[in-house]
Image 1 (cartoon, rainbow, N blue to C red):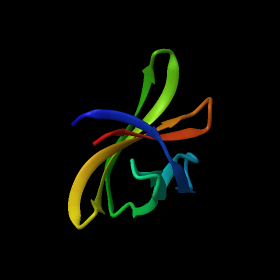
Image 2 (image 1 turned 135 degrees about the vertical axis):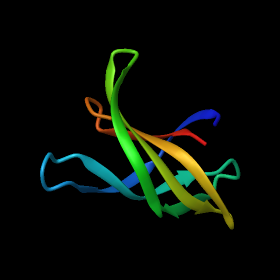
Image 3 (image 1 turned 135 degrees about the horizontal axis):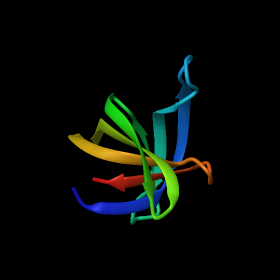
Image 4 (image 1 turned 180 degrees about the vertical axis):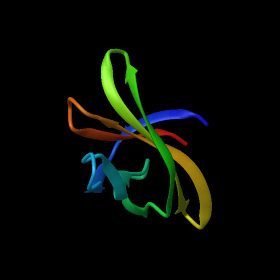
Length: 88
Protein backbone atom coordinates (compact mmCIF):
# COMPACT_ATOMS: atom_id res chain seq x y z
CA UNK A 1 0.00 0.00 0.00
CA UNK A 2 1.11 3.52 -0.78
CA UNK A 3 0.87 6.37 1.75
CA UNK A 4 -1.40 9.13 0.40
CA UNK A 5 -2.44 10.95 3.60
CA UNK A 6 -5.35 12.94 2.05
CA UNK A 7 -7.82 14.74 4.36
CA UNK A 8 -11.38 13.40 4.21
CA UNK A 9 -14.84 14.29 5.53
CA UNK A 10 -16.06 11.32 7.57
CA UNK A 11 -19.28 10.09 9.14
CA UNK A 12 -18.50 7.80 12.07
CA UNK A 13 -20.42 5.74 14.60
CA UNK A 14 -19.19 5.22 18.15
CA UNK A 15 -18.85 1.92 20.01
CA UNK A 16 -21.05 1.37 23.09
CA UNK A 17 -18.35 0.09 25.42
CA UNK A 18 -15.32 2.36 24.94
CA UNK A 19 -16.55 5.15 22.63
CA UNK A 20 -14.12 4.31 19.80
CA UNK A 21 -15.15 6.01 16.54
CA UNK A 22 -15.75 3.60 13.62
CA UNK A 23 -15.87 5.05 10.07
CA UNK A 24 -19.18 4.59 8.24
CA UNK A 25 -18.61 6.57 5.03
CA UNK A 26 -16.42 9.41 3.82
CA UNK A 27 -15.97 12.01 1.08
CA UNK A 28 -12.68 12.66 -0.69
CA UNK A 29 -11.61 15.19 -3.32
CA UNK A 30 -10.26 13.59 -6.49
CA UNK A 31 -7.52 15.17 -8.58
CA UNK A 32 -10.23 16.45 -10.94
CA UNK A 33 -11.65 18.54 -8.03
CA UNK A 34 -14.71 16.25 -7.88
CA UNK A 35 -15.85 15.10 -4.43
CA UNK A 36 -16.74 11.40 -4.29
CA UNK A 37 -18.55 9.53 -1.50
CA UNK A 38 -17.26 6.13 -0.39
CA UNK A 39 -19.27 3.72 1.79
CA UNK A 40 -17.05 1.67 4.15
CA UNK A 41 -18.14 -1.89 3.33
CA UNK A 42 -15.94 -3.80 5.77
CA UNK A 43 -13.59 -2.97 8.66
CA UNK A 44 -10.99 -5.69 9.20
CA UNK A 45 -9.74 -4.19 12.44
CA UNK A 46 -8.19 -1.17 14.09
CA UNK A 47 -5.18 -0.43 16.25
CA UNK A 48 -4.06 2.50 18.35
CA UNK A 49 -0.63 3.90 17.51
CA UNK A 50 1.47 6.90 18.33
CA UNK A 51 2.82 8.27 15.03
CA UNK A 52 5.28 11.19 15.31
CA UNK A 53 3.99 11.78 18.85
CA UNK A 54 0.35 12.00 17.74
CA UNK A 55 -2.09 9.44 19.16
CA UNK A 56 -3.91 7.85 16.23
CA UNK A 57 -6.29 5.01 15.44
CA UNK A 58 -5.57 3.17 12.17
CA UNK A 59 -8.50 1.32 10.52
CA UNK A 60 -7.98 -1.32 7.82
CA UNK A 61 -11.05 -1.17 5.56
CA UNK A 62 -12.50 -2.40 2.27
CA UNK A 63 -14.73 -0.49 -0.17
CA UNK A 64 -15.54 -0.06 -3.84
CA UNK A 65 -13.71 2.84 -5.54
CA UNK A 66 -14.82 3.39 -9.15
CA UNK A 67 -16.12 -0.18 -9.64
CA UNK A 68 -12.91 -1.67 -8.14
CA UNK A 69 -12.91 -3.25 -4.68
CA UNK A 70 -9.93 -1.97 -2.70
CA UNK A 71 -8.35 -2.40 0.71
CA UNK A 72 -7.13 0.81 2.33
CA UNK A 73 -6.36 2.39 5.71
CA UNK A 74 -8.02 5.36 7.38
CA UNK A 75 -6.33 7.24 10.19
CA UNK A 76 -8.12 9.14 12.95
CA UNK A 77 -5.91 11.59 14.85
CA UNK A 78 -7.43 11.67 18.33
CA UNK A 79 -6.01 14.98 19.63
CA UNK A 80 -6.87 16.82 16.39
CA UNK A 81 -10.26 15.07 15.79
CA UNK A 82 -9.24 14.70 12.13
CA UNK A 83 -9.56 11.86 9.58
CA UNK A 84 -7.25 11.10 6.65
CA UNK A 85 -7.12 8.46 3.93
CA UNK A 86 -3.78 7.11 5.09
CA UNK A 87 -2.83 4.28 2.71
CA UNK A 88 -4.32 2.81 -0.43
